[in-house]
Each structure stands twice: as structure tokens, then as C-alpha cells.
Image 1 (cartoon, rainbow over the protein chains, first blue to last red):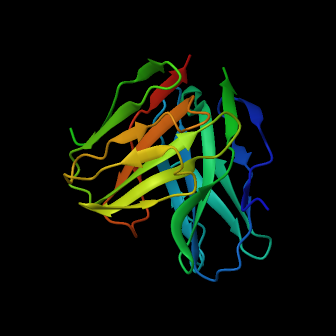
Image 2: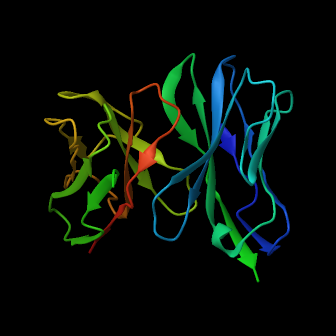
Length: 115
Length: 113
């Protein structure tokens, strides 16, 4: 069974609009962390934001926020006021602190910002 | 500037040949990782090392080998035993094995002809 599911293979969004990238996860651990990374065409993965399972507030980092709905096991990334430079692949990942220290990755969403 | 350097960026290899991908970091991180990325899939862990002279297999270690003789270096050898080696390979590091944030290199694209 997929532990991390990103249902949107690709998205087109108009510049300056907000965009939500979906991520659902599956774990039986109580302690886990959720991550979002950005991969531009240059290839490297860039860390964007982290949410711990015990964090009561949704994580925010500048224009990025994580809409964490624990009961629904969803951790959607919200990018406000999108920019052309936001065009990239976006990956959701999870680390289960109780059982496995290694990251489990989703298949990614390709985001294209239209001018 | 501190970071992770992977080389070569592009590599072509004939079937049956071993090839070594280089990964060097100057971040003074203890932990280093190798991931494989295929189109339409998430990253998959090949090997990781939490300390010098020690490394563990990840989910897809078969056909690959690594060494960690120095803190800053974690080379990956793709052997002829790897059945489908054409892929994009990413090296990463973190301060230690339990840290939240991974830092990545720009990757090496291996094509087997």
C-alpha cells in the first residue's frame, strides 16, 4: 500500500494565484513528520516545510504553509501568491519516528505557473 | 559556499560496466544518503551512512555498493549486477541521522546504452 499519495500528477496555475498541492499519508505510528520538497529543473531537492505529528499549529514558512488535517491524514502544501519561479516538481515525504528513520516519498506533482 | 557536490552530472555507460558516482559535502554533516529517482515515482533509498566507516542498506541496495572512508565523501558504485541502472541519482546529507532537513546535491543522470 502507498504510504504517501500525491493525486495530482500535474497542475497549471495562473501567476499570483494561490495553489494547493495535495498529499495524503498512511501510518500507524503516533510520532511522525511530514515534509515538502521542491525540485526545480536543475535537479536538486530543496526543503520547504516540516510538520510534526504533535504540532498543534499548521507550519508556515514565508509563502508556504502546510494544511495539516491529522484525522484525515492529509498534509497539503499551500503556496500563496504564486510566482513563475515556483514552477517545479513538488514532493511530499514522511518519516515515521517510531519505526523507521528514513523518508518515504510520494511520486510528486509537477506545478507550472502561467504568466 | 557550503553544499553537496555530485559528479559527473551526466554519465553514459555500456552494459556490464561498473560506474562510480561521486558525492562530496563540506557541511560537516555526519549522515549521508543515496537516492534513486525514476520518472513518476518517489525517491527510493539505496544506501545511507550515519557515521564514517559505517553504512546501511536502504530499500533498493541490490546491485549497488558504497564506502564511507571520510566524513565528507560517500561515493556510490553502480555495478553490472544492477538490472536497470538508468536513472537519476541524488546524494543528500543531514547533520545527523535524526535531523529533519536533508540537503541535496544536483544529481547525476546515468544512462546505460
